Length: 219
Ligand SMILES: O=C(O)CCC(=O)C(=O)O
Image (cartoon, rainbow, N blue to C red; front, side):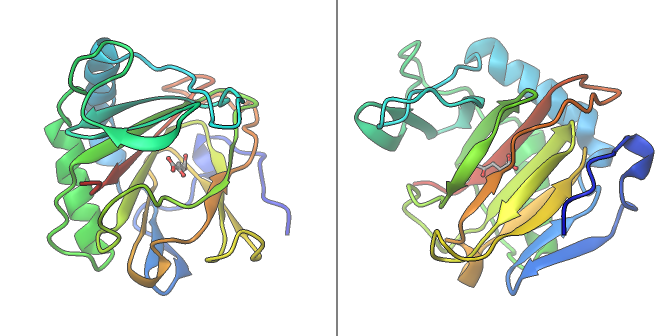
């Protein structure tokens, strides 16, 4: 069924609801809402030190999503491939510290989804504008697949694609709203996922932007 994209803030599903995506993957509706301002302050602190940038893929394309990182490891992409680094290649400095609000939310959401004791060391922050998309991929540059991925959505709604363990598997489509948190791990840890091209559906707080950050254990 086509996703409903005729969305405004009032259409967001009730806070506290859950959408089960798989045996060990779930959308926690509105889980980050009460902490959104602290999280956005964290995004400002991170991007003040390590600005958003559009990275090149190994195949020579420019990603439509701009990204940056915080934590002791940061994900990068360039002509040489995808990998985690301790330093921001733009500045040569270590990536900014992960804001406490990010790590606390990630720990709490992971526990809520059945993954107690999550101790993240990396966070990839994505900035989407209308037209930005993220093609289907697996998060597999992390050393430890035993830990889940915790993904926080702020700003404009987006259609999240969640597939199977093979690229060609059928994908489900779930609209993610400001404050939603997705957690996947265990048997679902390596499932393909992505984001459909963003529509221009300005959000009252962030305008024509969507910020997503995925909190991970990479090292
Ligand atoms: O923006 C999203 O909801 C997903 C982000 C994602 O898949 C990633 O950073 O690997």
